Picture 1 (cartoon, rainbow, N blue to C red):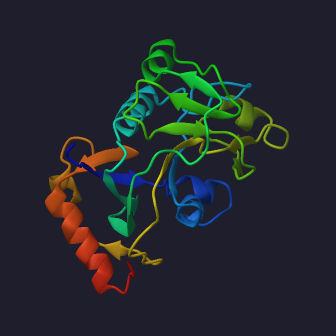
Picture 2: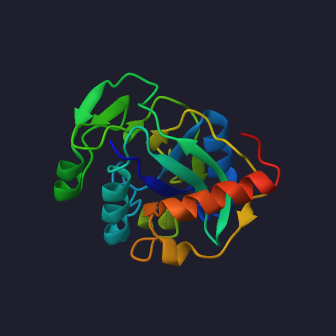
Length: 214
């Protein structure tokens, strides 16, 4: 089976909204050898990304196509790249099963606890609600958060995840590089998107040259 190459965006915008650095999500993902995404439909009185249906749908579809054995780059917007990693099967055993297409068609989540396997994904994308890591914030797009800011903070869990064997060539300050829009011209603003093998190799070499260890 041929390998594919991906850029995985760790969401630089949410951290500052919750009073944290822009690397808040990235740092946890690098530590735990995984990528994390927070795109969910409204539930538990919060709107989450209910008003951003197109990015939500696109990001779930792209992330669900990542396969075991693929290679990916840890990325924050503004063209900063931090590490590379090879995708593995989820480390945790699933408790529930669902389908990506059902979730997108019905615009709702069946499970908000445990480990959720998505049977129509390529085998790497899953959800994990079992750890206690989160980002508490008042979402500016959520009416509940804005109407009752003290009582109604959201807990962003970043439960959609993909595991890697390890993050290689880590450069904690990141490497800024041009060319991303050409390497993935149609979807480079999504949370997860494919890139060319050539661009992946360029990023890997740049990380190595900046002191990243294999």
